[in-house]
Image (cartoon, rainbow, N blue to C red; front, side):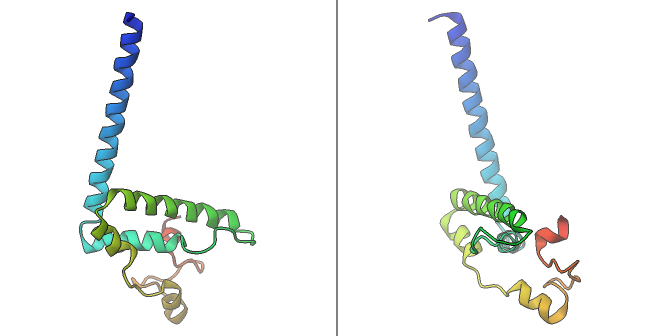
Length: 128
């Protein structure tokens, strides 16, 4: 085996190890965020705001925006499902929670008491 081939194989192994380390670091990060009620609540709100259980296609002018937000939510759902222990994932995915749209419709404020900005009561809407 040539020296060039050996170098290429070592580099490939190093890259594989770096990817493995990043996956492990990400898994630890997800576990840390989901380890308490605040983190679970935050992740649930992100998933709720992404409308992952609604159809992906919307025939309105903002359809592409909603499809992109839904896609991000589906990626988060998959990452949580793949990286959390089943009982932690179930606690986030299956928890009962109020409908944020109903709260805003009744009070004009989201469930944290913050006025909904421009009719967007979602957590993602608060940041974007």
